[in-house]
Amino acid sequence: MIAFVMGILFIIQFFVPHQWSQDMLTWVTKWLSIIGGVTLLVGAGSLIHIHYAKIKRRVAGWGYSGVMFFGLILSLSAGITPALIILFAPAQGNQSFLGIEGINTVPGVEPGGPLDWVFMKMFNPMSATMFSILGFFMASAAFRAFRARSLEATLLLVAAVLIMLGQTPLGGMLWSGIPDIMAWLLAVPNTAAKRAIIFGVVLGSIATSLRIIFGIERSYLGGGKE
Amino acid sequence: MRDEFRYNLTRWIIFILVALALSIPQFIKFGLPWSTTARVVHNIYDKIESLPEGSPVIISSSFDPASAGELKPMELAFVRQCFRKNLRVIGLTIWGVPAVPMMTDIINQVAKEMGKQYGVDYVILPFKPGPVYLTMCQDFYLAYPSDHKDEPTKPMPVFKGIRTLKDIKFLMDFAAGVTIDYWITYGREKAKIDLGLGCTAVMATDYYPYLQSKQLLGLIGGLGAASQYEALVQKPGTATEGMRPQTVVHLLIIALIMVGNLIFIVTKSKRR
Image 1 (cartoon, each protein chain N blue to C red):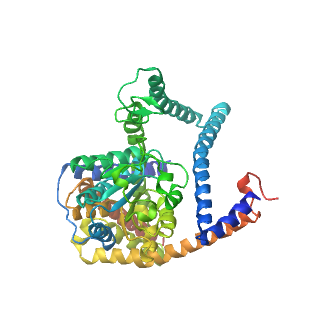
Image 2: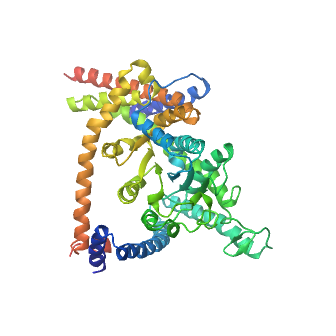
Image 3: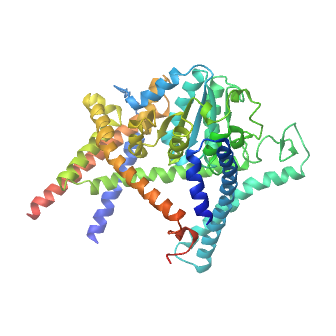
């Protein structure tokens, strides 16, 4: 019922520029921000629940869940400990955090603070490393999978080679037509294909939204089809 | 067993070749100037050049360290151009908490270089969960009553004349995800502001339809486009440096594809 009323109301609201309609939107967006904040807690709770269950049942790879808890506790401590210390430390300076004098930002986040250290020295390099590994796998996959087995596959292969050359200054140095061909490939065949995909996805989204609004689709509530 | 050994050996050889192709050009310096700049990249540069001094511009940093290699150089170059043009820069993120320290680092670095004053020439806003882009369309200060230092935003000179998102002259999203979709829906279609996108190379193809529909004014896609932007602002940085390893790795991958196909053709003819 809530989904139905709110769904219909805000479809109408989008087309009504009256002040009442705008005020209603402002009021609801405040609630959306509050709900958004609460979902972070729900997400953290869900993460803890899943990994705790993995450790408890000793499922394959449960050790990684332990690493997750280590990271979680470390990050939480790095963020909370400075705040706790400040609560019991004498005030300095003229700025405040949550009414506590001497602090000009969230404790621990300032450059050189514990949370900043965890982010810059741990999260930053580890995250970049994980993404960088993709380059190695992509090279290996290109060697194994990019085969001219059919006309379509050959066209794909030629397009990929031209794009790869065009993505570097060397393409234009080898032949001035390569950047133009790359621009055409992206702007014409690629755009046509992507537009078709976008239309398909959007029509699907509209259909799903209508199913939710009219109560046909209820799996988002946690249950299956009745 | 023999096949598995051969498979692993080939894989390791490719990995070593990629590692060499990436690391050797870091030490051997050679110039690789762009012969042309892509129109879609130039459009963003031209838009910023056309804005009058003091115009407010939003920089939405929507990436974390995983994509910083591609997106940080283009954001640095873009911020540099904005400050050079004396535009007011408002930095924010709708991506998540990890984007804030990176954005702060990038904007502060250029601001320090160019002698810009916090609160007057630029500001950094905190991450807010929920659809802040929607709230910004109604009231900017309802979405962001305070900056990342918890200081009230409304009295800051950088926000002079700004009431809603509609008062922003240009929004540039540096995105590693789908955040630009929200900016297109609410920023472009609701608030009618001009948008630009800086994204990873792998994402760029997804957003070409929005260029044709003029919902995006321009696009900086990947390290190659970032190095083109660095060339436009005449300040070569890590993207320009990165063109050497990227060129060598792309050539290596093309060579690997050719070798793979040669093996495929020979094997196929032998079977016949």
